[in-house]
Length: 299
Image 1 (tube, rainbow, N blue to C red):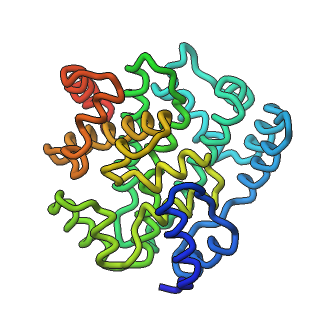
Image 2: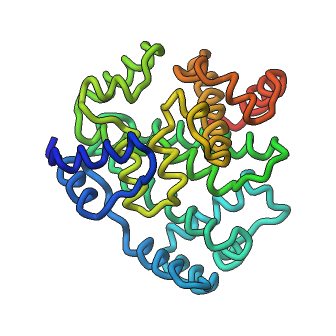
């Protein structure tokens, strides 16, 4: 692993005190030398430059996106999916951008581009299966959000659900035995996946996912949740109510998808289930209803 001791120490010190979670370009470049961190495409850089304006022009954003036919088609497919519950189909990128707003369209494009940036030829896991699972978690996160009385962002829920594990393809592109380590973790629920990864590789997918999300300039709150999503103490130690809420939705979605796939709870669920239900103000009967309703969404 080609990582400088000083930069690893700098990052882990930052993570442990959780006061200031930022990754500078030097640290990202250092990580990239040891891991296949996908670079930002020029399209995303252009959009982020436009978003940096005091008042981003939604039509300008749409015009830039429309120049990439494949990305435009994927964005429209997502906007017209049941996630957004539109009464009529949208066939124009400009209409889609106006409907979901500048942040929503930027997140959707980022989702499309980041997913495309990982290549199966470089991976020791089956990426199609990985993204199917991630997509199920993203859709289930939105389903849970729609069932709640509190106002939540569908775009952020979908992005968090899709990319909370984006460090896994990075791990799989470097370590030929990663799939065995992952399977071992599935059979060892008493330990978190990140703890098992640390013991084998001295780094974990949540840390790398945080680097990827930060280098692609995803919203800072999403980056922090990616970093902490296997922390079984997060709900009792975090003072950020919004992050606790999104964390709870993500972990419930993870468990629902895991139950449908493996017919048992995910490793983290027994340790956090009571807190998750309490934060979402949800009875166990409501959770069971969601578990049943979500079966149709699994792909």
